[in-house]
Image (cartoon, rainbow, N blue to C red):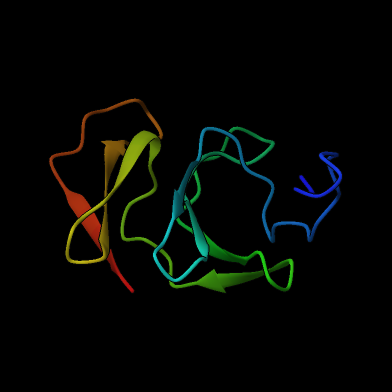
Length: 100
């Protein structure tokens, strides 16, 4: 949304189409989008960073486990903690950290 005109504008396309993802606004202004499912209901391992200054998405390293119905929490030490369910809706005891 353009704050001056209060209308929606198109921006750069994500590298992978996703649903049931998490999006976390990082202190450096980038947005971290993690996991989710693609259009074929396959759970993704990937994560992307969005730069609102350029409208560009960058693919970053894959996560160890694919997750859906997960949460992402920004911690005080500027890391992002991701935990949640695998593609079969099975509980995972693992969690993963993204370091800025």
